[in-house]
Amino acid sequence: MTFSAVRFVATTGVLALASLHAYAAKVQLKAELTGAQEVPSKDVAGKGTLTATLDTESGELTYHVTFSGLTGPVTAAHFHGPAAEGVNAKPQVPVKVNPIESPLDGTAQITPEQGKDLVEGKWYFNLHTAANPGGEIRGQVLKQ
Image (cartoon, rainbow, N blue to C red; front, side):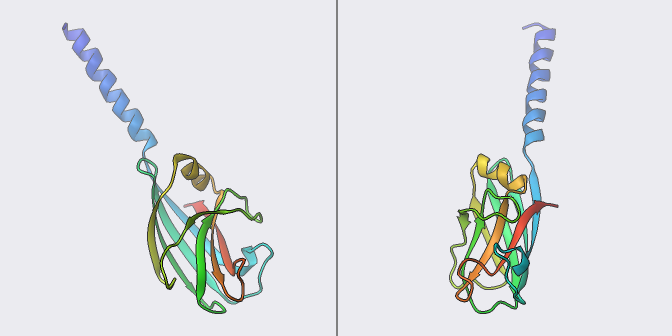
């Protein structure tokens, strides 16, 4: 192999790795959870915050949720989507712990399509209670 062929192969390899790295990222996400964001909105004292990180290479979603002031214990929690603010959608990632208490930490594997919707702000996080089975507080998940 000639020197220029070796240089070409080495340069191509470096560029390929740089391209892959450009697409791999850890995206920071956040949502403020309130009753006003529910559809229909709820006049409740509850509030919460979700922070999350999506590893776009592995599809791992890591999240941390704190909440307080709800009408009762949380009966279910989910990431829902795809949906714009003010629109309801089906659950995409259920929280599978019991009881669901604050603070809440978890991880989930999501597909590349789900990751794209999440990063584009098309997912929301919802906490459900017995008094509000359709959801008591909710927040649109957005990039920080």
